Length: 219
Length: 224
Image 1 (cartoon, rainbow over the protein chains, first blue to last red):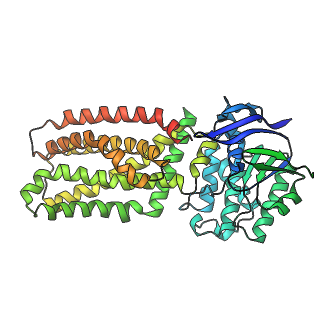
Image 2: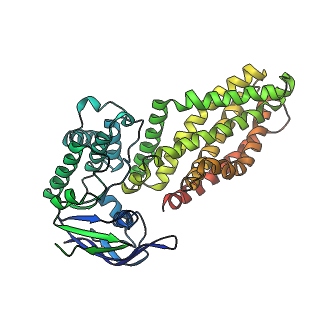
């Protein structure tokens, strides 16, 4: 089953064509890496696939939902890790992850249980659970962000520079996390500048330049 | 409806928990509002009769100036780490987000009004002759400014200069609320013969319209 199907997808930010006719097919269980210079359109492509920005022209489906008409359904089924943490600085680690579990529609008890499991899975130290997120290191914040996304149990992960700001240990956590979710049946599209790291994870690398995504020829 | 209430309460509780935790309202907004009252006192040469006469207007000007701080804070909670994207991806109803954030600001404004009521009694020597009108008009006005402020906060949130633009956008819209609330409080203080309940009725209408428009427009405003 194709998780992402884009045909000549164009996205306009104002009058600027941020994506200029992208053709992309991603199958279930795949890891697809996006590389390219800053401003090439990687983040826009991920946000389009998350249903966060409207498709201008062309056509596309994500998880079987039409990008023109079913953006809300797409949003509920994907997880997107952006450049920022998406967390509330004044809430604790536990409160943040539980909040996002409840935001996904879970009742309080289930949300709490799922949050505890997600925190443990991401290896956030127990002594940090009661601390406000503002006091965490970049690596711990990234782990907490991932934990707050795990609770939603998404079918498609869209990761934008997931290694940025992380130390070696944190980077390895992210890599093993990506492998784990794919082994569990999810699909991952990851934008990264760290080609060595990403090529070890994924045999399929695409280059985004000038709003167009191209398959790397040396694959 | 059950899901809507879940989303509404979740957002409201989250914002309030953050405010209680950070103590911004108690440590910064309330002292700022009280300081405004004191400065008005200096500006009017500490003439108690004049201060009593103008205390309703001064009260609401202090509330509106403080509201700007509360709105900026409410907006920044969602923008500083782009949590708003998370709320969108979670599929929360935009109306529930709007009303939840409005509810949290409403609670903060009510706390502020309590302190300011004490402020005008202590600093200006005001005497509340109709406490029921005072409370009802205060609550209705708090609803009106909270929903309007939340809507305009969302409107300004996508702009790079939102800190400076928000007052220019919001204060003119709230001018009718300032007039109505001042008239209602003048009635509650017995300073004028204006019918405070009629003004409170008008404020209720404003609050209803603002809440309805805000609920309809918020989802569009927070989309890219």
